[in-house]
Length: 545
Image (cartoon, rainbow, N blue to C red):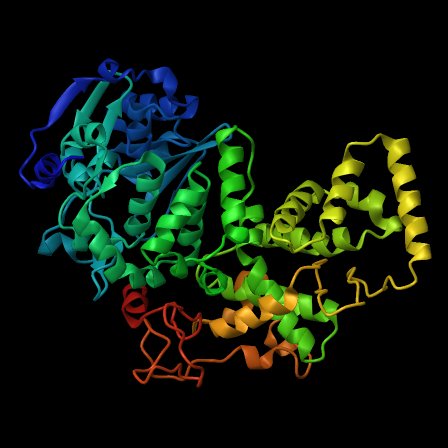
């Protein structure tokens, strides 16, 4: 975009509302889901206004297939629920209705409005940092458009009348591939910090240029993401990395220092000089999404958290714990701590653990387990995970090739391969039986089938000064229902890795002005330690009470 055109886009002059025929942008009702059409028709037949709104309209205009459809209306959540049998109100910050049609859930939101001082009481609540903790002030459609985050997301489509409504110049910005905030950038980010993540997502997914003012604010206000509930962050993470542009999104998150607020322990392990497992996983996910193949969140989370788990397990083993015990403690600790930043539903955590557990069993290749392993529900995901690890020389390539070959054989040939493997094991007297498949005949072997330069990686992690910690949240030891907290750790295993932050510290930093962490560890420039951040602040807790 030329400098002249960019300056024109940045002008904050009022935009005349446009009402256009949707056919001009090749948008038709049959591009909407059946459920979205039913919801809109039902609301309009009952005398309410109803439109498809937001990102789905934007995607239709740029020729992309929306993943879901959101509806906006002047009906209250209670009135919406009165029109549908399968409907319920959800949310506290902004109450909406979820309407279930067949297997699809349509999010129906009531038009919002800017509130004056009188209507703000009890309906709109802000924290001292400007974050909206309640926002239940209803208004008109035109007012609702001005309350949205970006102009490209403030478009309304009525499939009944085939009209497209634009109050803020969103159509012009889509044509110019420009992402512009509605209203003051800092205010919008403070009201809802998740909008900073959306800036990154839209830029990576749609190739839009971002407002310079917005990008300067992101690095300044990124710490406000600590105040967003972990459950909401989980939803945003899926949108970030399952949209077909995961790798580009990852690069931008790192560039603008937002990734550390999503996966702080993974961020400590990343190497700027060479791609690791997260980058490999992102590229793999993009390929599958763009080919129309299914992806599961558990695989992405397993790749993201693998290195923190592995590093912790190695440290516990060096303290004298058995390999099995060390891996269990490391897995429980990592999942529990991660849940303080991005929630991991229990069903998802179980799948992640299955993928990790199968790594050990796949690397071990015990002949008596081969058949049962291939029948495991998560075998394919675990195999794909093993394949990515082999590309980083974490696993012997011959192990991966063996598993690749056996999947291509018929039952008789598979049996022959297992018999051959059994004979090789009987002849190999040095092959250990340590329950996790480690060859212990040399110092290069770690606990997950790795024959690469393990000692070099350990030294690299030491040089980074990686530390682990957790936020001071209520019941943090029981997050996500994970068992095996510190109270269940064996004596001398892992306790020194977890240090509670002394009371009285602020929520945004884990270090003192003298350049050291409060637990005495030296700070490493450019690295953010996981400890010393509070999930809840006094502002948000008072607003919720």
